[in-house]
Amino acid sequence: MRFQAKYVSADDAGDYYQVSFETADPNDDATDPPGLDSPYLIIQRQFETPDGGRCYIETHDHGYVGHYRLKLIDFSPTQLLIAIERKSNTHVEVTYAALDAVEFDEVQRVVNIIFDRHS
Image (cartoon, rainbow, N blue to C red):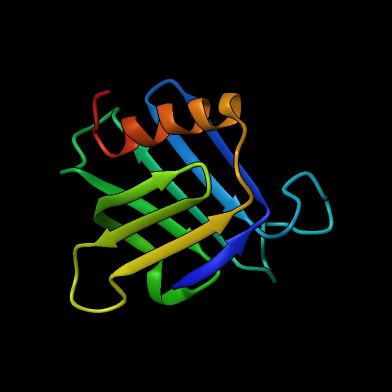
């Protein structure tokens, strides 16, 4: 799966972490849930209970939805590229307009937690 996102965000609440990549404005009440008719990707991970290193993927493409082990291949101010540990539909690439340094640092912090990377 590959698409161009217009909005990138990261959230955390206690032991729950999430990054979102959306083509529709997440603050627009016209889309509920976010991106219903537009490409989007949400990656979530919780640390409240043992999860076996699995993340939850929610997206417009039902072939990618579910709990999986993920490998971060690249995260930069303009791209996210991940590999999903399974037999088919194994790669996701999201490109977006360059995040400024503050935005990138915040999203990178959450990405590093989700993917168990320490920097």
